[in-house]
Length: 241
Image 1: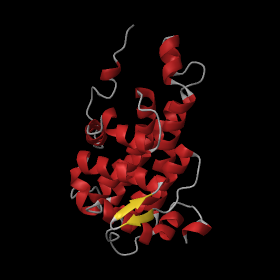
Image 2 (image 1 turned 135 degrees about the horizontal axis):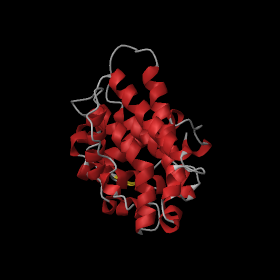
Image 3 (image 1 turned 180 degrees about the vertical axis):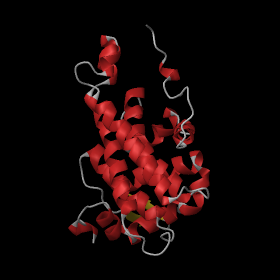
């Protein structure tokens, strides 16, 4: 029987726990970022701008964009609601990975579709989603230190981008270097600037949490570089101190 992929996210029955709303919100959020939105980021990384490459890049970045969205918007869910949603996301990703075995749901697909969908990159993307959800659950489960951290969204995003950059490029992210006036450069800065432009265009509701100009972006990255790398779980490089 031919099944429509488009109909998969829908449910016939409403969820008494409100999970339908969370799923709808996530789908609506992802719709803000078509593949074309990632072309400038791919170019900054010196990566292919073909559909397959852009889809992989989208898989790397969307979880971080979504967490930024949750942290910055005025209708931010409570900590318990966020943990609950993240647990659902982690379980869904884990189920998808485990279903690849004999008799799993992937066996119902034709050979061509299965080969296209279940390759190493797709599996890695789903695993990253599960790992990122697990990491955020651990962070949110820590005892409250007295309210929401003030204006920490930029530093958190920057540390996430360090991990993404190093995962995609296979090389250390280095502190942006000052060129002249208000101009900054460097491979990581080009990547961060492309992400910054993408967010300002496609997620304008987080603009107040981001640097207002490319110059301010460079200033902020340089000023906070050591703490950004530590937050990313990386040791500061000797040349960057």
